Image 1 (cartoon, rainbow, N blue to C red):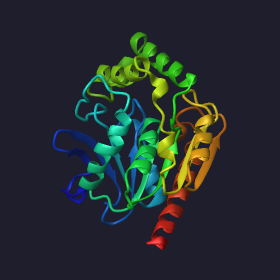
Image 2 (image 1 turned 30 degrees about the vertical axis):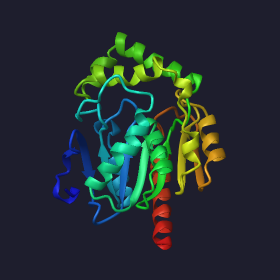
Image 3 (image 1 turned 180 degrees about the vertical axis):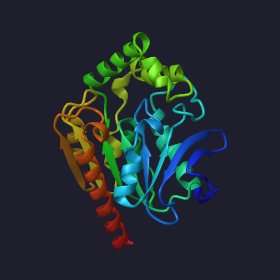
Length: 270
């Protein structure tokens, strides 16, 4: 089934799972598509109006979806395994792109979504993807990462964070426990994506807040050291983990400019 036959909001059926989505602007048969992958506790709705502003500024179609276990999508099997992002990138995302009729465009990921985009870029030979935008990516786990995840779990168990996330997720307990447990109860030090980075063959834009509480500039350095593809970096002062909210305009401008150039370059190479 092609997304041209689906409404702006709804669910994509992938056989054994249903994934919540939004499609903004032209469909994949009419324009390039920017596919957005959310953070570890995100979903379609938690992107706010950034996808709408991105569509308006770029002219591309924007496809946003909630991964398995997030938003209103089907529940995820729990407990999650340490390689859950690799499974998402290699097993689910390729099926999703085919079902929606994806023809050409970019992957735009934030946090876990950026890691999934990087895995996809390094693992899946997909000539339809012209570039990757990685906002606040994780390529390996730092002490600051696990400490901040532990703080999230504590806040969820002791504050109104549970009620706030309950607005967005059909089962917030499963979403939060499933995500935090995988980092807090496993040998997280063995989780490492740097090998995948060497196999990415499209341009990459890394956007990193200088005050990111989940990762340091070592993540950016890993991309610069391991990738053979062109790497651009936007470092944002006074910005923590969510550049598209905390530094909205510079982030939007950078993504739009990068997408335009990546798509033009891919078109000229075709």
